Image 1 (cartoon, rainbow, N blue to C red):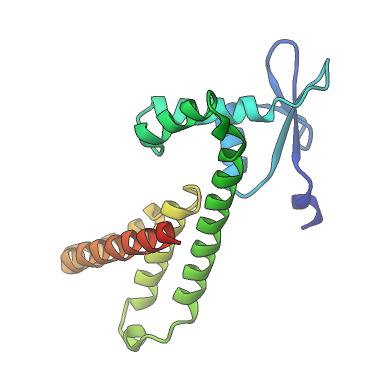
Image 2 (cartoon, rainbow, N blue to C red):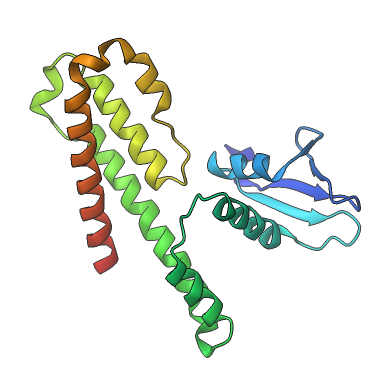
Length: 189
């Protein structure tokens, strides 16, 4: 755990190649995005000057995901960000964004705790544990920086899919509605 506390050091060489100092190999932007999704802090520095380039590369990762159609940031949010660079609100925006994401992380953590500890009368039903794992994976993928995946859990249950497919979709729709309600409540706070 102490190793996870310090940032993963990535050095950028003059050739613009990125070098992972832990594994002694070259990495791509997608590799760096994977480290971050796994919960690692990353620091990217220029080998020659020692300049911290982390912000520049994180923005590049976001821009690449957005350009591939993985739109997370609505146009109005991007517009407001651009606008904040040209106004006196610039000093408030970073603190607001940091507090918003912290609140989202805390909400996700509490939601996951409640899912794990909430007594449920359906727990004795066959297949309930698999369904609960799928729900947790879905919530992690939506709220946890897309770090989880509901794909493998679904593949394991493919032989049962025709019999319970519609109820899974209904459950997923209910989860999405609950998630939207939770996001609305969080935004009101």
